[in-house]
Amino acid sequence: MTATTDLARTLGPALPTARGPLSAAVLTALTGGRPQAAALAREAGIQAAVADPYGEDLQLALYVLYELHYRGFAGVPEGCEWDPDLLRVRGVLEDRFLTALRRDVPASRTVADAFGELLVEPVPAGRNARGQEAEGDTGGVAHHLQHRGELWQFREYAALRSLYHLKEADPHAWVVPRLAGRAKAAMVAVEYDEFGAGRAEHVHARLFAELMRDLDLNAAYGHYLDAAPGPALPPVNLMSLFGLHRSLRGALVGHFGCVEVTSSPGSRRLAAALRRLGAGAAAQRFYDEHVEADAVHEQVVRREVIGGLLEDEPALESDVAFGADATVFLEDRLGAALLECWRVGASALRVPLQPVPSPESPQGPRPAAAPRAWGQSPDADPDGA
Image (tube, rainbow, N blue to C red; front, side, top):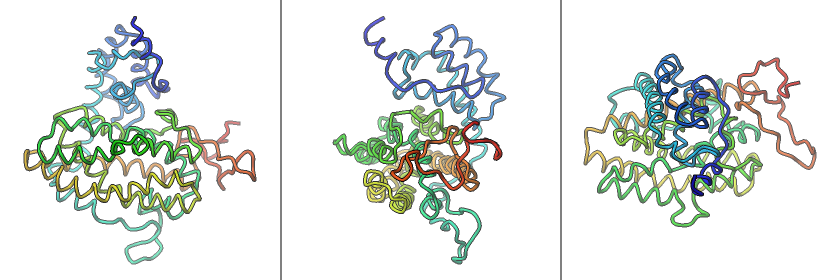
């Protein structure tokens, strides 16, 4: 075994804990070598056929296989990235996931339909269209955090979103060689900003890591994978699915466009939430940066990236719309799951975070209703006593 291979087996985050038979089999195959991978490939179709396409078992298995194309895992050889048996398994899981999305997301929509809806501001949380108090958090997670969210809730949000933001812009870079002309030039221009415009300290993933440290979170890549609830995995897997398939280049552009269009107003609310909660400058900087940058990116993506792609390949219009609609669908599922937990004082994470230490209380403040773990009974002791 070469020194390079030895090094590859020690770098990267630790493998997560399995959440069902599919993810357990994938984790065993990654550490057990070719015989286990071949056996898994033979059984994958049977197991996947009965698995929930959005469920945490299938989604964790898919997440782990996708992560081989990013930074990999400690103890897993680099050669696993292109192991043919593991690729067969990934293909089966992708097909199950993509089939469900095509079933649940509106088909044959135009770009104007999909993006026109994104440009309409939602009703603010706690108010209806007439400005009257309304039940629930109709404006979603960002509105909730801006107006009534607590610090422990924002810390949970940052922890689970780290699975996305610590690889922000990476999967979108895969589409660059699949574009041409206006679309390619504009895509590279936007990605250049995402990657810090040539300065490492301005890379957006690094800014998010600084936000996490400001909130007393562990900023190590992949650290919160085990803590992330099931609904947090599909939005991350979606961009990997689109990015790794040339046939889905239109959907990836739609995903990218959706992110850029919705980022600026959402970031403005989250920055306001952090100021209200007394977070530090580093935490605020990430979202303040996105308010300004993504307001510009929105126009570039809509007019040049999407416009240029459809000028070259007009047949991809429904794919672009599908990419945007699928993004909204999965983000809405995640938002609903978070708010459902937070409304009753429960943690949205599988493993609740420790409170932030404070001078007044060495053990740190506790929420008015101490959060219990994701899926835990309301009567259960959150500390496991």
